[in-house]
Amino acid sequence: MKNEKLWGGRFEQSLESWVEEFGASITFDQKMAEFDIKGSIAHAKMLGQTGIIDLVEAETLVKGLEELLAEYHEGKLVFDVTNEDIHMNIEVLLTQKVGAVAGKLHTARSRNDQVATDMHLYLKYHLGDIIERLSHLRHVLVALAEKHVKTIMPGYTHLQHAQPISLGHYFMAYYSMFTRDSERFEFNISHTDISPLGAAALAGTTFPIDRELTAELMGFEAIYTNSLDAVSDRDFIVEFLTNASLLMMHMSRICEELVSWCSNECQYITLSDTFSTGSSIMPQKKNPDMAELIRGKTGRVYGNLFSLLTVMKSLPLAYNKDLQEDKEGMFDTVETISVSIDILAGMLESMTVNEERMLYSTEKDFSNATELADYLATKGIPFRKAHEIVGSLVLECTQSGNFLQDVPLSRYKELSDLIEDDIYDVLQSKTAVERRNSYGGTGFMQVLQQIDQAKTQLTS
Ligand code: ARG
Image (tube, rainbow, N blue to C red; front, side, top):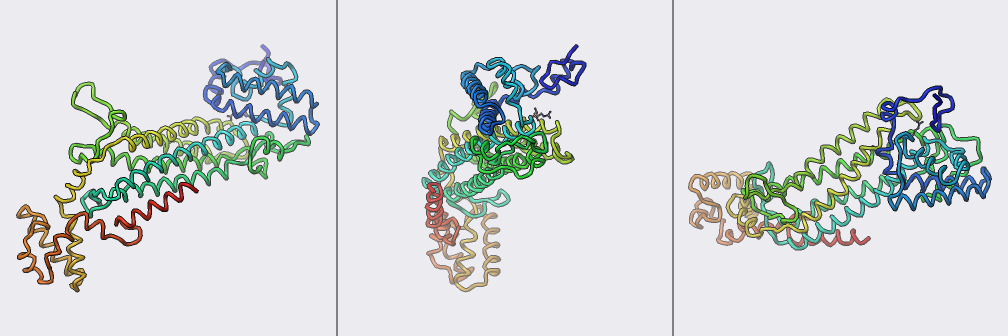
């Protein structure tokens, strides 16, 4: 039985259908259909303009491809697994539309540079989209920070109350992380915005192609300088998956905190009903599922990174079919991080902060102990000595069930006659936060300054 594939000439037999399915990628690479068609339009125009094919034939190809693009947007294109991948599916559909001239489209091109082109176009588009979504999340964080400059919360180290901080300061910490994430995606664009088209199978082509022209028609900034590199480079995807992993790590950290903040133990926030779910057995439950899911999905994004690194590690130059395994992890990561960014932004925007509860929890602890030690140090007592005095007072308080602000002045005077009754103001959480005015600290002035800088950054 003759082999009917586009590449079937040298075969005497056909693939068995289950083997064919194993080799096919159309079930997933159809996500690049739009980019595949756009790449082909650029290639066809170039073939016409360089005289490699007849100008009228090139116009026929372009017109046919444009119709296919419109039909794709209308959801009308039907792909067939026997045509293996998106590239051959489009070519078969084009043949049905314009006839045998469709066979000229693949002149001076290989699926190897074609698939690389599609991936670059796909990722470039989504990098831009992801940066926009991140920008929205960063705006949400800045707005929350602005609203909560003076909201006091316990700052933690080792998950123990450490020193009170401004909730605005906390939000701005995540703003900084997501800003770096955004910058990494920007940099990622510079390695993605490069055209591999024209590298052909691996070695370039004898046809007088114009790679600058196709690059320009597709909107690429640059072209690959080496054809072997062009068809086998997947660094831009590894970079993307790395950047996505870092982003997920940041999102997972804030989600972990949201989960504990809405626990019975903390009650610092109440998530909106629109971002929470219930239990099928326990009627009282309101669960932070969305935050947990973002935390959980971090695992699959890390997995996608490791999967591609492993696919790549022993590949000889140039194209190998292993490279077909570069796609699903990339698509999955794009989809996972895009929706996760939006969910996180929505969850933050719609939650209620229980300000009194946050403040209260900084008043029933010893997170003002540093204030007392600093107070003594300011009066000339060596900090180590001050630390020791306060440490033993904390011990005394834990035994009597008191806090530092409850200790009478007479007792303070026994410890040091340098202590005056202004100590009670110093010990207040709000004062503690307000006075931490060193650059980048949690003091209100500092937080406001961070917010100002962020706003300038977001508008530039
Ligand atoms: N579906 C293939 C892929 O995703 C397209 C390139 C096929 N090239 C080849 N020489 N078989 O990698």
